[in-house]
Image (cartoon, rainbow, N blue to C red; front, side, top):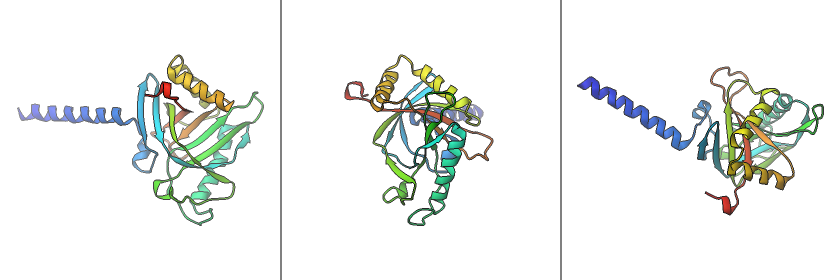
Length: 222
């Protein structure tokens, strides 16, 4: 009888853990070790999530023109790494966070340079007065909706555009797709963002995401 009760308790605990994850959204394992921005999970669909981020703050590079997303991400990452190591106006060190974002504005042709902006999430304790730095600028989001697709392994110049296309296909025909198209039309551009959660030296449990950021007007609000 005691064994049966123990098994029931184990199953109940497992169920509660699953429910908690469904309610709170999926955070990559690294977010248990370093700070990540909070979000509200709005919808979990087939191969996508819709999240609502509430006013996160990012330190961002100027646009980097390159034919390679990998090369641009690396360049931007090391500029931001110098920033958190104290290469800023306050000579202040800042804790590493996740994810590191690379916003991609694709070029018009296969041999033309695309434009990339790499961003680092500012920890909450630094948000009241983030150190400025030459060549970097601060971005503060309002309430921002994000359509998200997760994928593992290393993000490359080859697989990132394919994952972005897969996210677009997953949300095609939904009200989210219409809202994303409207937001991009307003900015007169087509953009997506790669979110990287792991250092290049981590080979297990790698998590990457493709993000489409967008706004919802009052008629579409939840």
